Image 1 (tube, rainbow, N blue to C red):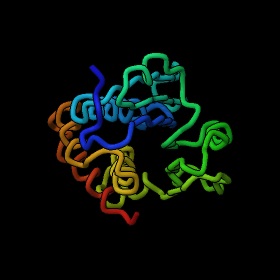
Image 2 (image 1 turned 180 degrees about the vertical axis):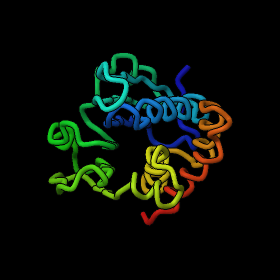
Image 3 (image 1 turned 90 degrees about the vertical axis):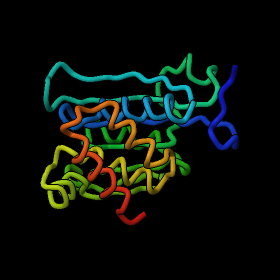
Image 4 (image 1 turned 135 degrees about the horizontal axis):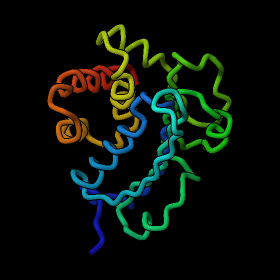
Length: 190
């Protein structure tokens, strides 16, 4: 039986690309978005994770699709028409910028990338890692802070659903810090 998004609106199909380096929580973001979409929004998801053998510092990437029809996800081979690109660290940034279109949301952590993003996408470039350190005294939650900003700008998922996903996915001792990071990002200017 086909699923539909909660509001019964137009069909949903969103391709998401998340790029960074090992230790930044790239894979966590992908798993969190997938969990929230499937469990709390009644949507289908498919994702592939790519990472190098280094525990920290090597490139990490998640290609993901979220859709309301199973047919839209079962043969997903990778992002080709991104709705959302998140770049936490600029590995191969030119390759990812070339994928962006006018209707793509592009979020870049400027802590690690000082260049200009030459792209038709809607660009949101802030120093998310520095903001996490300044606002929360912990740069490890830069990924969640950035996700809060994504939620504010795109409306892709309700904040409360993502909080529930964090509560389910993360160790309870990290809940409060991640909730604060999510809310801090959500409160950044859109």
